[in-house]
Image (cartoon, rainbow, N blue to C red):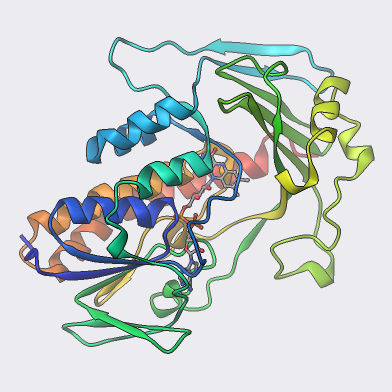
Length: 356
Ligand SMILES: Cc1cc2nc3c(=O)[nH]c(=O)nc-3n(C[C@H](O)[C@H](O)[C@H](O)COP(=O)(O)OP(=O)(O)OC[C@H]3O[C@@H](n4cnc5c(N)ncnc54)[C@H](O)[C@@H]3O)c2cc1C
């Protein structure tokens, strides 16, 4: 086993980095988790955690899965509707006794459940990574405020715009998936009964989903197909973040009204991006996990799950390998084919199904 006095730094306290920190600390490693934001980034909207994701969390720390189960809705039905509101297909979801459910839950509840399992002294906020240096025995992270951290292994869990990735595969460009997406949370428990996930299947240039996330709140996502203008290339958000009324009007009245009733401060808007599969995810003593390594379209809802699976596998290889280079090599060999498949199939679904 890689010795437990090994010092490991993680950049990014999103769901991937925070869960990995929990797992590594449980294994006895010395862990520091760095986040550029001043406090946990509990913004964001509703999340579908597929069953594999709940299993990945449960395998590492059952307290986390219990908190998530307590705060959200177990998935009961996937219902596919056309843009007139007619039901195309309704698929009930049943579970065996003791089987973990898929969950519909607020991102905030997920991140808090994970962060609760971390000793506060390992968490460092206001710590924005500026650059990385490494030798064959150590890695050093330099932060914007002039401080630095030095240890044996540095992990980039810093999301789709990863700075850490720059030192492994430079100049990765974001791939535009062709949609602007708005997501919101509204106080409502009538539109979507508990545990129901409604999909208004893609047609006439739009797509939408709705699900209840517990606590009398409903999440919605609304996607429109739109090319970026020249001045929007390279940006995360469109110049105009208002939902075009003529696009919203393509939804049935009840769905449109629910979106219109959402307070503006509960709505986020961004272009939808992923990245191409990377040829490698580590270099020397620096490695990537989560969206930093394999950001993908949201169509298969594998984003968070794949980050947690990374955490499980990386921890396993560190526990079982003789040294860090061996663990990283084994991790990469095992994970790359799997995450490339997630990326490929998610993008394919996003680009092919129902587009104009
Ligand atoms: C529209 C949409 C819907 C989605 N729906 C689902 C869903 O239903 N189910 C699902 O499983 N997934 C979904 N996802 C994907 C999911 O949100 C992501 O895969 C997941 O949040 C990635 O987690 P992460 O920790 O890897 O990255 P992030 O959540 O991006 O976290 C990265 C962290 O690193 C920090 N950071 C960045 N740069 C630095 C730096 N230089 N120094 C220090 N800190 C830094 C950031 O502040 C952030 O806290 C969706 C994504 C989108 C866009």
